[in-house]
Image (cartoon, helix red, strand yellow):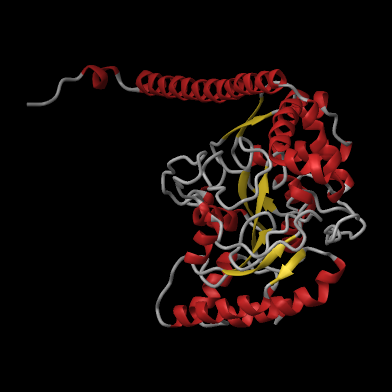
Length: 411
């Protein structure tokens, strides 16, 4: 059964659960067997909570059989990056400094929402140390490997989340993104990862890296599943100071419409000038643009501030905020950090308040630059539509008979 089920989408699983083809418990047993067999070579799990997962799967199946359908994710197994609290499980953050830490007393906001919708939490997934270190071998847990090639890294810092999805362990996971940590594993593992709008998803109960940059993001194998997972975790949280009121809507409602008429800005200078990409990567980007145009999208080249500057501003802000979080431990227990995380975190000690303020000011300017491109692109498109419509109307009128154009209504 595992071979038949391990790459099913959330949508497919939901239909099978509700039709009685198989149950959440049967699925969870099959996936746990696959995890037991393959994870020793991938190191994607910090902790697989098999007994709790089986109990949750059994309960989900009974509810669905009894007519209680909580959500499209009811009975679906998920995994959680190990900087996100799950009640009863330790949040290790992958370092030595928190090794032996007790279990979390309560679920994070996102895990609480997933449980309320009937998901089956399978356990905690590998990350970089405090979501910043890197693939390190001087820590209690070995780094996760890429299922496509175990000699390769699956991308960080949501490395375990990317690896489990690519390996067919289950169809949905949560990651976090401060400077690419959902998107990098998505690209390395060939899955779908989204960094949501800042404040859309609560970060309460997530160990912070950088207060003004942290995001929790959905990771899945399909775009439709990603929309379902984002629907599940989106909510305003008054206990997260960065949270914003969210307009409740199904994020996947327009997926079936395709891309015809969509306006897509292609920032070519990112990979052609700023940080030259490998020719194979550049060719793949051009092919993606070609396919989108062939499907009816309008793809135009646009310019933004340099990718190097985006990266530099992110590094200053992240380093300063991470130092503020870790300074007490680094001053007294620096040797309890892995070498990669220690080196990256200590960089924040050499930044001044002025460096941080200037980076925040430039951040606002860069946000305005991006907003300006969106505004101009939208306005230009609307003007183009108006001109085309006006021209079409004039052509129709020019072809109409003169008498008809000047005829008066009959009485």
